[in-house]
Length: 254
Image (tube, rainbow, N blue to C red):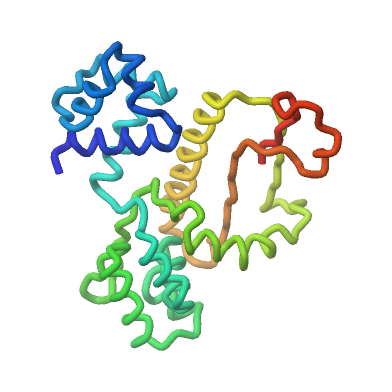
């Protein structure tokens, strides 16, 4: 796929994420909706000036758009719904996938988990077919996912973790030196909310970059670490009976 087409596809995803329509873009660019559709059908016709205007509309820096495009071009950013179902349906496969995403090598998985070597190879071959990894000679593993890789929102993996993992994750006072829980509340506009979503994605990328930086350390020096970050428009239901006007009720960011 040509680079300009990939850029436009990423931009389309960002527009959809923010609920911005072609008509909204047309109003900003002073064009008809049909003209905008033609522009997006042919990336070569979208000038840098117009691209900059669309980025301003969705409160995204052009540099961020280029970064996302580069990641999508080089690596896998998401799986299909069916592929996620395959992982959830096979606990051993899901375990191996999580280990690989966390940077485990073949020998380290064997050392930590009660998996026969032949079974581990089978699961790695399955992940190779899913394009999550490339299984190299000597059972070496090359991870193919992008720093911006994410599970489908509301998809099989996310549902599994919400049902099976999140409750256990929060069974802590988060008072130890190696844990922290912060909840912030405030009134926030949607454009600002979108900016924070971009920052959250950058934070996720930094998380994985930091894990990669520690990859040269021994397994005894590294510890399984999970980070849960979320932001949404949300009002605590306990206060519903006190609300007069939804437009001014306190929203909680969590």
